[in-house]
Image 1 (tube, rainbow, N blue to C red):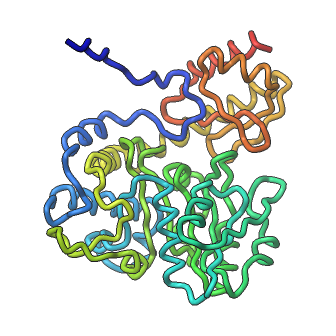
Image 2 (image 1 turned 45 degrees about the horizontal axis):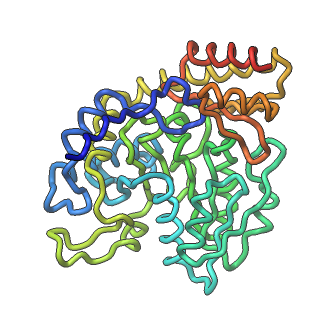
Length: 365
């Protein structure tokens, strides 16, 4: 008889400092378990989870400023977005919609070099050219370079609100001006930053007139179960352009990329947003930003060069040998493209865990 397979448990988040995902909120866990077997890809068959998806999109519409930017009731927002598998799917779909609606023979996407690697995937899968432009000295999109890169073939301009490496927020209103002048859509990738940004003072979402689509992930700072991303559009025609007929389902068509989707992610996003939006997320932002500033100050006091945090992400120079030693002590760290260490202050990251990290850092130094 075959030996029983030993029970395996996921690792603790105690020493995870580089991830942009976190432990789900208890309300998200409970909802995810209840809806594990449902498929929002066929809403006519699974109407309860379909209603939860409409609630989630209405909540994300409020978070991103879409509620104030579009006339209509909450019931209308279900046609302006859907719950994706995450930022990669959302970004691919935004590029796909722009490509299919563009007049250009050879569509081009213009994005800063700080854009997430999912845009390289999108360009490869969809057969569009990705034209990356430099960032300025602070790691944000260089506006002169963007303006010079936009031409008649440009189908989409991309801005990032919370870059993966440094947590930088591109000047979205200025990018919007360029997009409006060129009569092209502007997509904002706020996959990680989206749940922090409403409390940060930045103009980044649909309150900026030229923003056409936004990516925002509940399974990151939103504390939903993985996978639960989000794609929202100012116009219904954007999602309509993505729709395909589904004749063997109860539902006549679907706009999603993955088809069958996880009801667990949808339900968990609805549950946690109902629990935390907006006051709980505001408190998370305040706490995370305070911790990021505290950490940056303590790293500087040890003689390390630190990039000033704009959102709760701290990048700093760290010798290779020290980085390796810390990894050897099970600290989950990653590096930027310029080889700095980076720590993402997610909801599971606490002052106690950062103090333990600093103690090990001192020992390694």
